[in-house]
Length: 149
Image 1 (cartoon, rainbow, N blue to C red):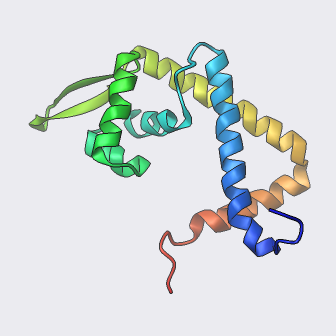
Image 2 (cartoon, rainbow, N blue to C red; image 1 turned 180 degrees about the horizontal axis):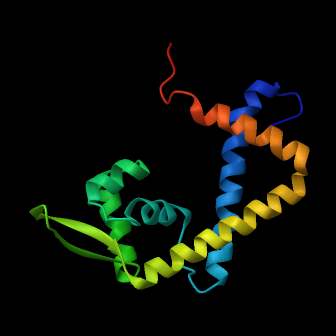
Image 3 (tube, rainbow, N blue to C red; image 1 turned 90 degrees about the vertical axis):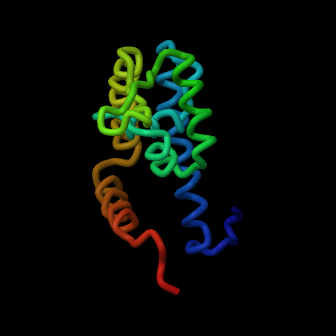
């Protein structure tokens, strides 16, 4: 994006760049603590299954991928010892994906890494800019997912 690009046109690009940069910095903190195979998409999976487990269909819908892609992601996480599968007590044909102790450990680590990143961002922005950014992000977060045309 050049300095000639109108501010409105820069907004979606800069939001995506910022989100990617923050995710990568958090992921780097996690990687340096002994989890080099994890990627930001795995954090979304952990978020979805952290409380009571979830099916592959639930995970796929939550992270916005196909059921086949979600299954491949879960297979890799299971192979690395972060998740396990068990029979769903409400539907014996279905399998629930749950965090293992290693998965719960890395989830706590991710929470700490995200807090450290938030502190670094707040320090870099200062209180006034931080307040404005948070207000703007709340507006964006409250917008409908599918705009009316």
